[in-house]
Image (tube, rainbow, N blue to C red; front, side, top):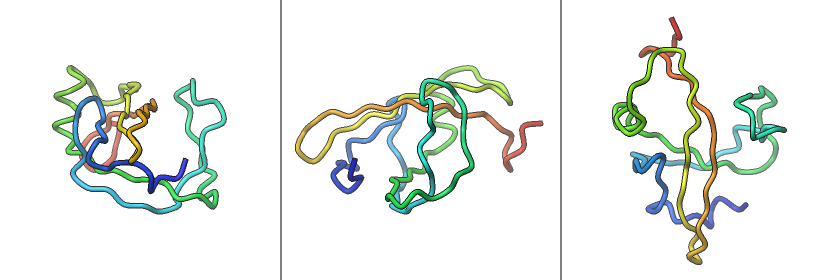
Length: 101
């Protein structure tokens, strides 16, 4: 997917709009996207669309969470031609400053 074909104004994470976005090659896709596994393979030569969301808005949208919880979230939007897109990924809730405990 060419990330430049995504209508940025349409993107939502659990109905939460991003506060900013950028394009950069930062990650390689996970081999098994049905699992909540990550990889550390880094760049893959393809641009990635990176979004920043206000954490408190995401927490409000998903409900009661605790530090260390792993939750699957849905990212949705549309392409510039009107085609709907949707993807899921997992996040780990951490304390402010990036620490789980």
